[in-house]
Length: 211
Image 1 (tube, rainbow, N blue to C red):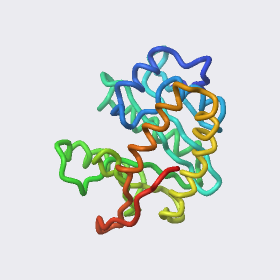
Image 2 (cartoon, helix red, strand yellow):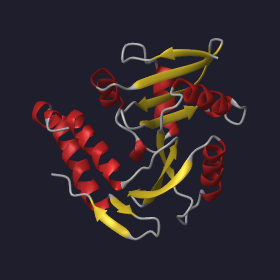
Image 3 (cartoon, rainbow, N blue to C red):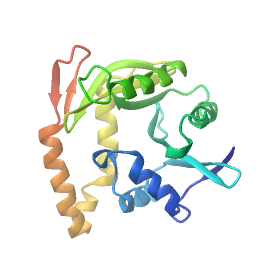
Image 4 (spheres, rainbow, N blue to C red):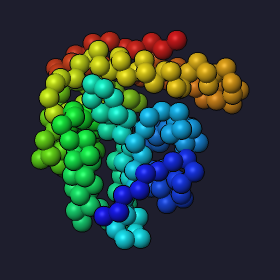
């Protein structure tokens, strides 16, 4: 498997198309904003190839306390062929000895894709991840935080990530680009209403009011 580091200059149409089709729109950062963040944040954006054939990509946000496994996608026609396992194995080896955190749709929620969620969770459990019992909800979809490696993940850790991301997404964006002002403020208002954190018993802990 060939591994290539991706920058805004080398991200091609195949990568963009997979990104925009593999994840629900609500879970995506607009492509142009993502390309900007690649240049401004210490993101590990990696594409994977079998010879010349594009397989998929991962985006990791490396952090001191743990690495945030942000996006992971395999081309639709290649899923179920073991490529996802190969990519995850390489990623774990790359960050060997370091804790890994990711979020995925929770299997505790009543939904239409419960079997798909269970398969995804089983995949991560087989690879050493565990459920932290920290939950968050976006647009009525409950996400659970999975972790691999030593340590724990708490609500305070989530607060820390939010504070870090604020440095890159606002207030600079709000001051500099009028079009993005409308998008950012709209998204913040949505989050103020819809982002809710739960404990392991699905009891509401807090709702994040963004300024």
